[in-house]
Length: 148
Figure 1 (cartoon, helix red, strand yellow):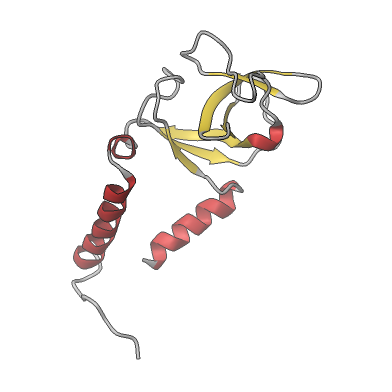
Figure 2 (cartoon, rainbow, N blue to C red):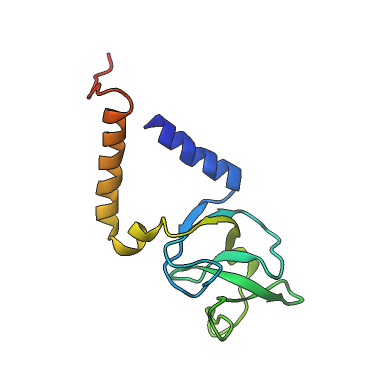
C-alpha cells in the first residue's frame, strides 16, 4: 500500500497539479483523445495556442485545445471534434487562466474505460480488492499482520 501512496505523491509532486490524471469521458477531443483515454496533466501556467488544457468550467473539468489567446490572457478553447468554440462562463468564450489546471503531456488510449462505465463506489471496491489481491499474490500471502 505504501508503494501506491508513494506513486500518487510522486505524480502530484512531478506534475505540480492536484489532478495529474484525468479520464476522457466524451468524444469532443477525437481523434487526438478518444473516450476512455487516460491523460497525464502537468501544471503549466503559460499555455500556448495548440496546447490541450484541462480547465474548471464550474460543474466539470473540461479537456480541450487552446485555439487563441486574447490580449488579456484569456483562452479560447474548442474540442477537436466540435464545430464551435467553447462557451462555459456566463456565455463568454473566455477561459480565465486561473481556471486552467494544467496541460496534457501524455495520454494512453482506452485504459480509462472502467472509469467511464462504472459508478465510483464500484470502482472504489474494485481498487480495494485489486490492491488486496496484489498484496496477497505478489507480495507473498502474508495476510493481515498486527504491529506491536
